[in-house]
Amino acid sequence: MLLNQKLILMKRKKKTRLVHEGINRSAFSETSEPIFMTSGFIYESAKEAELAFKDKKKRYIYSRYGNPTTSVFEERLASIEGAEKCWATSSGMSALFTILMSYLKKGDRVVAARALFGSCHYILTNILPNFGIEVVLIDGQNLNLWEKALKKKTKLVFFETPSNPCLEIIDIKKVSKMANRSGALVVVDNVFASPILQKPIEMGADVVMYSATKHIDGHGRVIGGAILGNNRFCEKYIQPFIRNTGPSLSPFNAWVLLKGLETLDLRINYQVESAKKIIDYLAEQKFVSEIFYPHYKKNKSYNLAKSQMLAGGTILSFTVNCKSSLHKKKVFDFLDNLNLIKISNNLGDNKSLITHPDTTTHHRLNEKEKRSLRITKNLIRLSVGLEETDDLIKDIDSSFNKVFRGKK
Image 1 (cartoon, rainbow, N blue to C red):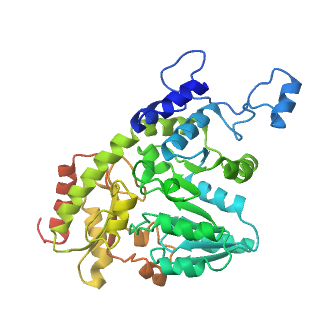
Image 2 (image 1 turned 60 degrees about the vertical axis):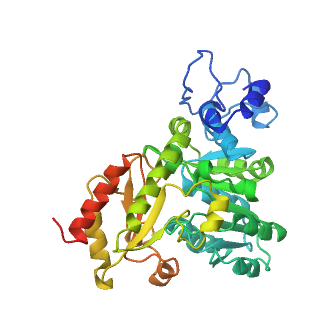
Image 3 (image 1 turned 135 degrees about the vertical axis):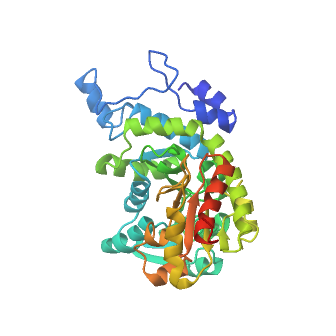
């Protein structure tokens, strides 16, 4: 994109940039971004190839290194996030693994919040120690624990906010300030909030990562990830790691994710409003014992969530009240009696999806770890989609009737 065109676009509002940012039309002047389904690229001469490989000529070399379709996605997401640079990856987990393995080395120390997605927890506790990297997990909501942990030399800090599945909120500004003072890189998983509702870089974080599979695609179609940060960090660590180890996003998936970005703001805002109405309904049910949602007034981190997030998000969790010996059975019966809402471990989709974290996304954690994160056998996580809200509430109510109210 020409420089003056880019400057004009940067002045435009978010919704406009979600549709137009990064477009670089081919000679055919297409309306939709083209998909460059190619593994390699042709050089005019052997000299040009030499200069390209020496980074003396900026051009596409190989789609593992970069691809025109992927570049449009990266530029557009960086613009929305407010980051200097974005590198797309093949999945959200490859994004996290790339950040960690490109930046850390034997003898380094990581401090992370304990409330993590199951696979993130696995990487930190099962894989990193094999490379001689120390990992310390703490209660991320406790600022005193962050301060204590960061008194010892730390290379990297990592946390999710809101966390999966109980939507814990961590103070991005205060933790980032403490970590930066000690020289630690701050990495924030912003999946639950999305770039529409929360901007960690504006609050002091160094790097933001996404599973683009979730809200960014939002249609349950493809898997992808993204790493966002400043130019120096991405050029020194992320670029050479991706180029040489290969967790690259395919051009087709990049194109699909571009289509997702175009409607991201519209989808998120509708889903947020729907989630709030469902919470109002759940709050009136006597057998719903607890509701986890950032902007729910009974949430102990409500004020912090309001200060960090424009809205509470598309995901909520809740517990049902019954005899402890029946927790798993009642939850399974409730899920099985839903008709419209489908059981799936995915989230951020156009379709409403529901899961039982204890036996799915966090099943690898031991019972002590689950209890510390409030992941109980009666916990349910709901990702709210684009269906008519009344239909979703009727579906939940119908299942409640059969399982908890004893009605047919």
